[in-house]
Length: 252
Figure 1 (tube, rainbow, N blue to C red):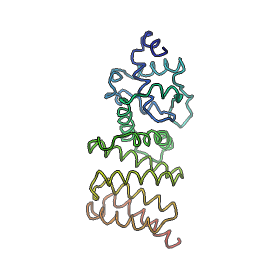
Figure 2: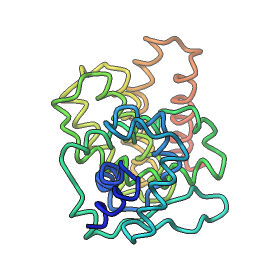
Figure 3: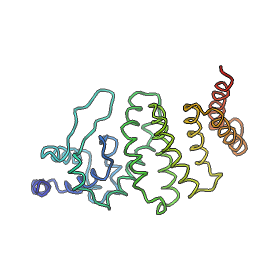
Figure 4: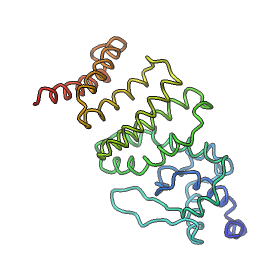
């Protein structure tokens, strides 16, 4: 009834927007990063909305209590919250794939290049639960290779954020799941598998399993050096990680 009322008041995409919001994770949603016109191009009727129209629909949903637009906190992205009952009532299978594509696109955008910036870190942290939910919801077997690789890249980012936040066990579980998925869908020497193995080695390092981390990084470094050459940026990053692990083992 609430959605029908909004439609009568001229918010014709209220139902479609509510269904899309329900397709994301049960966590605060950084809507300024996810609900932009360029991200909604594959979202059916929502593709016709420009920035002001998206905001008008969001505020209309909030006015009827279907979502809550939280007061922005300096240094963090603006977020909205949806009650679990509203989410359950609004969730439709057809919008899940759209939500997965939107989350993946947000992670791969150039807006997040400076990983040391505090606002960028806050954005990563807010996106992480939605990345992980996309990974859990995705039909991996049904993805083409580019879409699969993009999703694995996004989940690797979330795993690194968990590691940065000190959530080592959770980071390890996520990265091991990515590793298993890549083993099933990619050849063992695919470059993406080495990104995951590198990140997993960092988790092992932080969990005190330095010997295992060393073995993994040495294996990754050998293949990367052969394929990319000793001066490639990726090789240099892996070498620095390995040097850090070696210092740990030497007790320095």
